[in-house]
Image 1 (cartoon, rainbow, N blue to C red):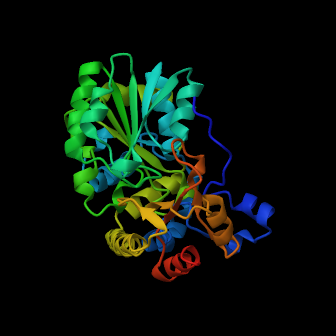
Image 2: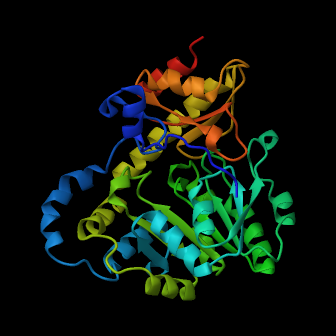
Length: 363
């Protein structure tokens, strides 16, 4: 098991406050990867009117919520499982599949490995190569798949590299995994931020592959991490039945269920988010491309991985510089296969991005 060093997560503002003596309310988190627009206006203006919903239990099967999610994601509501954040669904899926050996494409989010380890399984990593711009070489990857692997885990777009696997490549991977008896868990937390989501998401593939489960949530795109609303998409009816049998009833409270229905229907907010992230992603990528002291990797999500090329400058140095000005970036030295030359930051509103760029480009 790869050892993960301690680090500041995007939600660790209380720790930052203690260590740096900076009021958490004054910190702009470029590390949490949350939509800078905040929550949906429809949700903000309407949810308070639904407060009486907490007087009764929510629908045990969350049919109305699942229908809203299905319409938004482009699938059948029977293929939707809802949970208390995607973390609950990751845990439930791994408990049910109980993989003895899992393969993870890294560097990536550490929770996958943790859950596999808690279930008694071991984890192997297939490392994305820096010389390939951290883009997956599909054919080489497929050649590393073996019959003794039970589970493949990939984040798409990947965190922290912001690179993606197209659904055309996913078909090849899924075909190979079927031959080896490997189940595939794809985390699409950031896919809605991508310019061509339809070319990346694997939701349509769940109609053809029963060895695929897709995880999504509302924490990042809908700026609602405190809501704890996640969902999974799969065409495997047996898996759906097992998860619904295993998971506790009413893990999503009445207000969260109503909030989900509201936010998934806010088309203006969804469109504004996509436009903002798309334009700022392009602008910042081009700005960093022009520098000879940084190397950037083409991003698909709402964040960008950057390599520091200055010999006497580390990721910790840039973290310290930014946090003392009230901006929190991610020091990526804690990720497997990365070192103290990598940072990650998400795209915020233009004026906030300008402040961060000025800080990063300071001589």
